[in-house]
Amino acid sequence: MAKISPMMIIPPVIFAALAGLFAAGMFRDNANELPSTFVGQQAPSVPVEAVQGTVQLTDADLRVGDVTIVNFWASWCPPCRAEHPNLLDLQAQGYRVAGINFRDQQAQASEYLINSKDPFFATGFDLRGRVAIDWGVTAPPETFIVGGDGTVLFRFVGPLIGSDYEQRFLPELAKAMAE
Image (tube, rainbow, N blue to C red; front, side, top):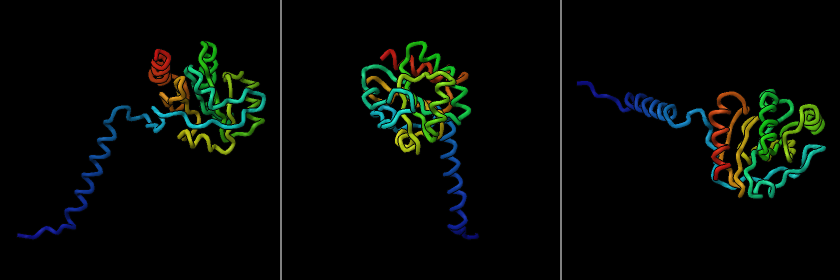
């Protein structure tokens, strides 16, 4: 009877372990949702500068007792432009919508808000994207629902449009408003 070398067993064992990890990842709840380490934690700091011609967003604005929607956007971002009408609609419905512009130029960001109508009660300007990194933002647009005490309640990756917006974001916003 031939002896089986341990070197013959190791590759199939490694393959089986990796296959098991991939399968577990595919079948987890919300497989398309990126986890956020900030959900349930206090919101990170906001930029110390505003988009020109707008009101400065402050850390205190996220802790005034009201739910705040914090949207990371850029004027050069096509998905940000696509979600803009929904941000205006949220503002028209009375929601507190704050905007943090990042990796943009002041002139372009300001011009965009003038030409497309500003949906934000206050803004932050994050030229180098350092604040976005602190929030865990991977690419614009990303939107957070922040409770009145400054706790991050929900993170939405991508534009606020379509069925994903209606089936995931709006129910989470309604839940936050009911709390």
